[in-house]
Image (cartoon, rainbow, N blue to C red):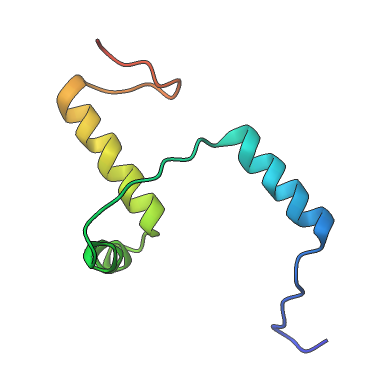
Length: 78
């Protein structure tokens, strides 16, 4: 195999990753106007973040401003 070549994930690896994701993460789908995704992605990139990381941080910062700090368990001030 050449140096730097990445082997495709096996079915077992794909299954393990899917199980891990299901057990450890919730999914959230948002809809935004056409073209906004690329604009948000560009800003995230300039900050060295993924789109998901950028949006997650933005949400957490907004919640913190509105309600105070939100603990890891998701239960903040009411």
